[in-house]
Image (cartoon, rainbow, N blue to C red):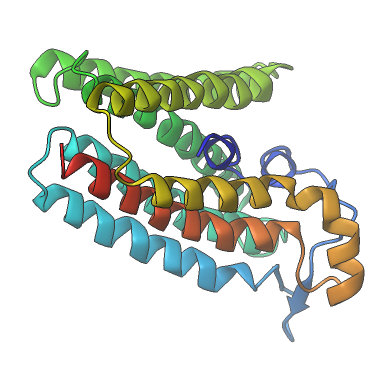
Length: 259
């Protein structure tokens, strides 16, 4: 689970955000239209549409659930659907400046990475709710959670405007490692308290698929050669992230519904 959570953003998001060349050894596969505009890495489009479907269906599923914390998990999956939809535009259209104006390219890139950090933050709040350290509902709790999401986007905007060198390390790596790492510890404590192993199969599935997605960039050169630039580590991550989220939803329902 931890490996999945720390790999919520594909390896090329930094280059998309900063408008740099793809740093991976496999240049992004692209298809150009007759007017000269190109679609980059079009194979991720189905995975993004699947992610949107997962995000929306699980959002409504959690909204209908009755266990404590269900509404908080619903927001996490809604964030996932939104983030992956934006990622479709960031990875397919943003690399070619002919599609969208520069200001919109930058806005979409900030939203993409911002929602990634928000997903990580929402898992942290979910963990606190699971342990009873934060109420699921309430004005103060809602205010705190909302402010944390606003602060994340404010941090990215501030970092871009003032060219903060450590923005990615702090706002992405720092936020994701601390919040998601804390969530994993809190889930372990929660399961130990209940003396339960319900949902561990789902949790293992999320962890394994997330780990493979995290390690995929190490084999990007081989994937690139094998598929002639058509299918790389970025594509692996996109599809495995969908699988991981399905497994994670399965874990939460299996473990929390029996609580």
